[in-house]
Length: 310
Image 1 (cartoon, rainbow, N blue to C red):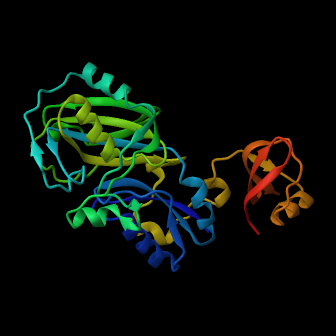
Image 2: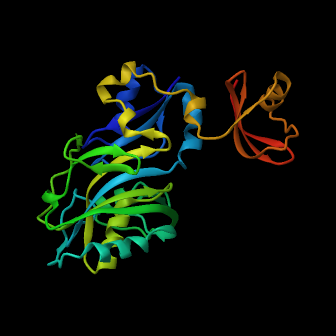
């Protein structure tokens, strides 16, 4: 069964998309490799039927985003869901100042998640507590932000580009291309347009908050498009209405690991959970005749099975 990159539209939760996929594919066994907020759009990778086995290996994939950050307004959700809880007058920062701030957020760091998130503390979901008027003490989490590229500084959110084309450097504003639908802005705020590449667990809403704080103003995420998850790009993502007929990729194609072709005897040992000797180092997808047998970790002496396929 396939692994399918879906282009999630504005206003749907990731769970909404999973439910639609279940109906379209005629199965209850559908998972995804990383949540997208309702006000975010773009690549959501779904794994159908037996392909749910690969979810655990794809959750750590890097992701690319286009992020519109509004300066001068705070929101409890950290995005355009709102409502506004604070507004201030903003001096429009120059590009060099913003680039210096963004440079300070690249690399490994500790990031405090949003209160409106699915994180659990003591069996309670943070967003459920927040909606009831409370808050949880959410500890900072270790994340990695690989790159932050400033694409523009704008005096008004509505002036920031919404039409883009894919390039070798990532999706870039272009006079002709794809026009993205963004949420209705919470107000007439200055805005930054940032292209981001981040590791697993990174919240772009938290990044927007923290970038604003570094610039000395409240800020929130006023638009977000995910343009890539692992090697699944937005250009190849299918629309929801095309889910029933979508071909997708096989488990082997979806796994971004080097391949290790083996013979029948070694394949059977791995399927039995044994640890055959091997000089391979690191994580590999093991194949027999081009078919996926297992995902293994090698230490240079033997292979340890992480997951096997029949």
